[in-house]
View 1 (cartoon, rainbow, N blue to C red):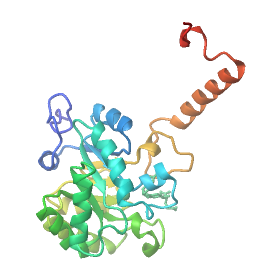
View 2 (view 1 turned 30 degrees about the vertical axis):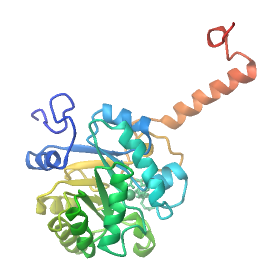
View 3 (view 1 turned 180 degrees about the vertical axis):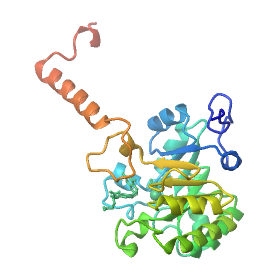
Length: 278
Ligand SMILES: Nc1nc(=O)c2c([nH]1)NC[C@@H]1CN(c3ccc(C(=O)N[C@@H](CCC(=O)O)C(=O)O)cc3)CN21
Ligand SMILES: CC(C)C(=O)C(=O)O
Ligand SMILES: [Mg+2]
């Protein structure tokens, strides 16, 4: 494969923008999105070359400890978004519109998106929703907000969808494709698909002009996204099937913290090098 341009921290763009992601799709290049919720992880992921940092409403689960993403507020999302924006030099920073912050009207969506950009310093937002939310997308785009549409399994609709279920199986792919096209036509610069059969995701990616991002949607989408605590093995709970564990941070952190604990109990920390003797 030839050297990618977009996904190339040395020779590529100094700040990833919407048109670079479009260029990646047109040139058959891939890009990576990873969640981030704080400044230090954002710095590490940005320096590693991740193209998009997603301040996901998954912070509800991974940072605050709620059972679902539903309870997280706009104010909480703004705090995490600010932190990630402070840690990002090159990556695009995208913030999720949390549950209850956009559904009522396009005007409500614009208000929330503007807050995430004005107060949180996000570069773009992501919104869960079908073609019924095309007018919301249009209004945000008109206000200067780049929007990613999130379709397939949309966790904010967990209770309406009947749990954590794969979407777009069988004939349902046609409706999902229509949703993707409607969101694209409304101005979404990218479509994210969650827990969709790989052939359906491939068909939808091919039907769209804009790039796609997948999570549990196979290898045919333009980009991929994972929740960082899942892929680095920090979480204790069992992870979804689509998660590849690239590290075992839970064990690493646990062993280091136990070593510190033992040192303190034994009186071997602090040793001379860590003290002020005058
Ligand atoms: N830590 C974390 N990772 C995520 O990927 C994630 C979040 N949180 N919070 C918001 C949404 C919710 N997502 C999830 C969470 C769990 C499953 C899951 O458990 N999937 C099962 C299949 C469903 C089941 O049988 O329970 C799987 O094995 O993939 C899927 C998507 C994706 N997002
Ligand atoms: C799982 C991704 C796509 C997300 O929406 C989140 O982290 O909130
Ligand atoms: Mg989300």
